[in-house]
Length: 275
Length: 186
Image (tube, rainbow over all chains, first blue to last red):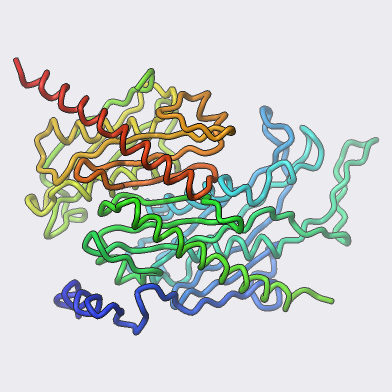
């Protein structure tokens, strides 16, 4: 396995299964922990911990107040930041964010923008004066492949958990008053879910690759769908060429996966909502 | 296409730094410099897209332990920037004479709010569009080498854009042939 990893994998793929016993189209066990009691971050306004097999990603959302930009006076900001600290895998060194972390941050920002998950106008409190800024920090604690799927899922779960305090602007003084007692949940319009595939030898497609499989793969595809079956993002950064039919195949599987994840999220949210 | 222009410079295969060299293939590096400002997260993600697209076509195994550097400078941006970069990158690879398995070209499709598909949108059309899809199409069998979408669209719309992009790819490859012929016919 260490000397000829590709041959080792090929032998398994010929039998249509993988070394960890999964089928080509099977996902690893997904678990998610949301909220202050189950999840670790107590200082964040919303948090979630997602485990996709061994890949562990934690997301913390902090809400702060800021003045909106001059050209978009009624829009707030969402700032996602993906970090791959050196503790999650030996290939990542400490220091400025590497290319993978930056590309992942950009991907998450694109998904939020494309899917219109959070409409920036909802984050505005007073036109031109005050708006919310949501800092979403996504940190990978254990990297075993399929970072993008886990990050998108963690972000979605954390955002569903965020409670924003009511902010009013005192007309006379012009200052803002934060009412910590009254909290409203964030309005999330769409629920995007990412599904990643790895391409082997230009033909075989496997779902939810582990870190080993990602290294051996000749390409990757990530498809983000929302609940209406619309494509929010198709991310295929190079790698072996795919025909249109294969891409369609991936999309169909992504739509099925979306339904599973949606059920999981709804179940977890219901179990932590206080009656 | 139009007023968007990107300058591509390719250096390699050259000696690679020991920390960056790969034992069995050439190490590809892409640097994208925007017209104004320092390269940010957007440039990094674009660099990653370009790098993996080029890695798929360049026969790196013929030049192990070397480095191939591709530097792209954006001269002007009037829409369809990513596909312009892709085309520039491919032509630079051709010009340098690096061994490639296939050529690729970048095509951008914009989906307008009323459903019509527009190829190679200008900056204004990009802003008005509901979704923008960029594909890198390989010359062999018109397969999809790279795909990125901005904005949401339905599955059928994506397939339609893909088909349109594949047809447009033929025109672009013809342009490649003409340019190369012009360059080497003197």
